[in-house]
Amino acid sequence: MSRQQPWDRALGLRSNLVPSIAGLADAACGSVLGRIIFSDGPVEPTLVDGVPSLTTHMANGNGTPVEEIWLTDRPVRSGTAGKAVFAEDGEHLFYAARLGPQPVYRERVRELYETALRFTWERGYTDLVRMWNLIGDITSPNSEGVEIYRDFCVGRAEAFATWEAQFPQLPAATGIGTLSPGMELCFLATKQGRTVHLENPRQTPAYKYPSRYGPISPSFARATFLRGQRAGSLFVSGTASILGEDTVHVDDIEQQTLEAIRNIDVLAGSDNLSRHGVDGDGYTVRDLDQIKVYVRDAEHVSAVRDICTQVFQANSEIAYFNVNVCRPDLLVEIEGVCR
Ligand code: 3EB
Image (cartoon, rainbow, N blue to C red):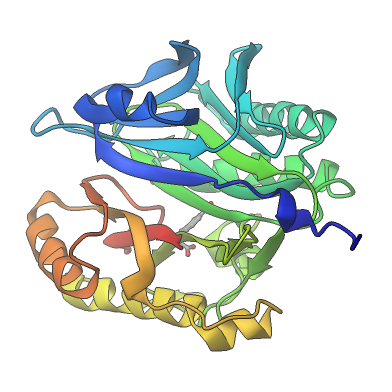
């Protein structure tokens, strides 16, 4: 018998981005690893009917909130770990935690991350796939006058430095604003051997950003490819109008939106995938689904929506959030999954 490839084990990890009303009904149809609820206030992570549920403040109370539901084909076991919640199916782990408002974040962020990485490693989930950092007051100063995003980046980088032997490679991530102080962390990890982390030839790797963007560079990759039973999935990080390391099209919402989309198109294309050793035809922006679009200014939402409606597939799941982006000159950021 031939040796089992790691991705033979891979049972469908998938997600849906749905109105929160429908969430629980849909969730009943699969094994639910976790829910991320984009609501009108933060809630401590909790198990709801046994499902790890993270509620973040990204909705302004008008309109129906949405939630992202992570599902697998396997039976799931969930639990709590201190104040964090998690679920695992033997192949995938979902973990979520919240940190309340802090005068200075770095030390508590380091602890939060180290606790999470230790838990993940000890349960045998050796490969990080996709992380979300949902950060209140992201561009505001902390009590020492340091921008909270930069303050956060220091703690995250210190935790990754401590755990570098176990987690030498940084996964796809999002670092984005929320509407309440404090921060939420959630992520997906897998057993060994299925992930490939990608950079974008149009962009300086974030972990090499120069110090004018913060004392320690952000710790994330531009995308992570997860091998599956058949094709696999490409998890696209929060992507903005950055070329090299510079924000481009300052004060131009249409051009920033189009540049972010071009960045995703190149990142996910076959040239970039094969450059990183991933075979196949590659993707285009038409393959992006479970799309989250973060727009800083409320008055820009409709212009961004018009562009996204044209560019992305009509049947794609897409949600818009009016939240701050991690650089004051970034007006929009887009993420999603290519399947
Ligand atoms: C950027 O490209 C925009 O700190 O985890 C995007 C994705 C961004 C993830 C993070 C930040 C993060 O630098 C910001």
